[in-house]
Length: 171
Image (cartoon, rainbow, N blue to C red; front, side, top):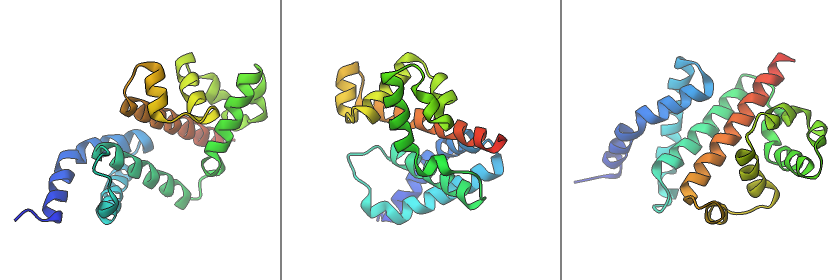
């Protein structure tokens, strides 16, 4: 008999190494990464009834892992004001930089991070956050898969947030 816990054990076994590697990239600390990965799988198990079958389990568990990472930052009283308003700030900064070269200065938490992006990365973020295009629309425009767009947006957002958090700690 193949029960839900058995199926989840199979998923855990199949994806644990990838989730752990992702958590290590996020927090750059092996012990914290173990805790984050474990908490992500616990949350995934609890939310399993809400898992959309058409969604990739790997993408889903990585989104959960990223949220656990952000929660761990909040619990340690790190400066996370950029996380709480990340999408609004990113939208505003991208809109401002789309209108003028110096527009990012009005959002100092993201100005340096946005300057470090390549032109294709900026266009991808702009399409998602300024023009509010769906991953499917962006994928069609770029000739890529929607999954690639979602993963790339998650990677970019995670990198921007992580960089902003690190910069916020040094001030």
